[in-house]
Image (tube, rainbow, N blue to C red):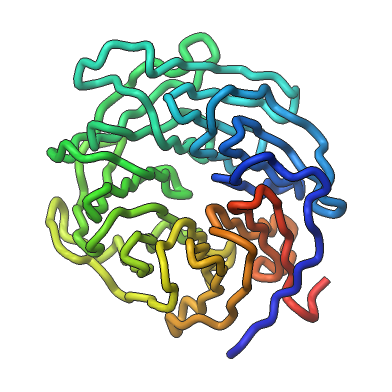
Length: 323
């Protein structure tokens, strides 16, 4: 199988620096964060800005939305975490994690992930642990629990599973840890990668975890076959084809395809059943962020995606022959 994707829309007013994260919401809006400190909401049909969040003097490193698309949590390079209510347009939570004493439980956040129902958010950073925080506007950012890896290594990315029952984190050492936040325990540790894990993506049913690394590979893990607490590769597939770091990944809403963006200036589309690349899209620079279009009304989930990268432009892509 081979697929062709066409660039249908390019944003009208690009960010002034690299786009480090994108999210596509069920109401067909796209959110982007940039190294220029801005967060924008875009109309997917026209590529025009529909709303802008408060500008930050430093770059924004990670973004995560609730399942219904109402709330978005995003984080700055020094650890300022904010929650934006897209229904009202208000910032409803703000937490200066860098201003808190480092006590083994609190640390400056680097990557954040919102629980699918926006009940909590997870963060990771320099300690190599996952911290779970309150999203209540009155206590936003308040520490709930710490999930320890036992490794004092930098956590580059963390992600709640779609069912909210697990949190995955990737370390600079190439290890991946999966936790049960309810039981407050580590489920498994994977040693699949030889270099830093830059990105993690769950399948819609929360059974598969796709990781991308500086070792140029994507590794697919089946969390159902991982013995509790065990360490090992845990890989059910290794996907190669990029010639530089894999910076971003996402599995499609129907679970059939996956995206990967790379420092080699390409986006690849992967068939999840054959574990092979079925399409390669050339971009103008490093591709830091990729996201599939959601399919809340049964639309073709694998028919469109959005990318953001080094040149500050958002680009919308559509499979040839789809509306």
